[in-house]
Image 1 (spheres, rainbow, N blue to C red):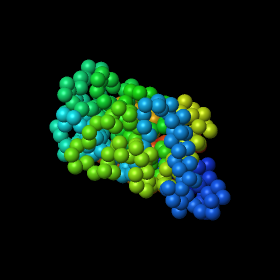
Image 2 (image 1 turned 30 degrees about the horizontal axis):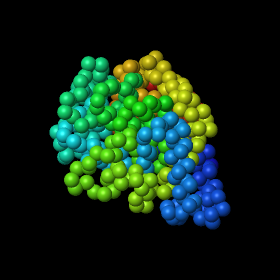
Image 3 (image 1 turned 135 degrees about the vertical axis):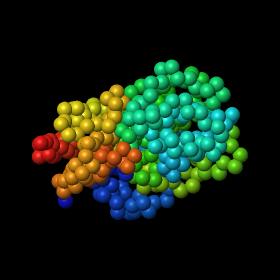
Image 4 (image 1 turned 120 degrees about the vertical axis):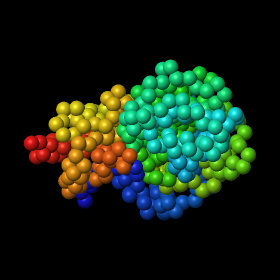
Length: 361
């Protein structure tokens, strides 16, 4: 069976090796006589799966011992509420707005307290990451929220902000495990799995242990308390067992292919192929400031909506799927996560060259 090149922003492409192993183990996981999908989460066999997944993620990211790893349901969107529910003291929150998801998180936080926007790139439709060198956090804020990589707009922080004495919260969903990250710069990191790690339905939370002692807001549901989940080893209730199993296979795949330094090198090479073409193209252009370009989500367009549509139609026929840009930006978006092979990006750039040659007057 011929697989297409899937440039979806999420749920996104997964490593073929992982999919093949999951297929091989679908009916019988390691002689258990059943699929992981059918297995009790209270069994010794499944406990070994989730324990191994956490241990491998700790190796991949070099997570210090004073951080807990949680596998949570509800995706990143539930984290928009869980963060203020669990980390509030003064009910004042600082936000850096760099796209759709940081705006959505801000709106959710406003349910629980006062939000201060301390920096934003909305003035230019989120086409850049604001300079934060001279930005100060509010004196009485409980935390500062940021979104590392902006899937829709194709921007990425090149250096992380520092706010001494503040809890920095990072929505790292679409850049998670694409390159090394210093976990200690953050009090809490969360990432939806469906970009770079696994199937939709799992979110990974990495939280510094001292933050678990903060008293959640009154009325916080039991299942939305980080400490409850941490104390139960992510199994207070039935977790997304199969999704966690797939995440575990992806962690092993990353380790087997050189870890995060190797992922970064591969991703930089893939992104450079597209950006170099865009910088010299006669009809295509990138939509993001060069200093803020994402390695994961490359947004581009032509000056003609008619030409954009013609490109998308031709690309689909040529075996390239999910290249349509988000309505907020328009044009095209190529999401080139870890599992997108270099051959896929080379084939896309070749198609773009051919399309340009056919449409340059």
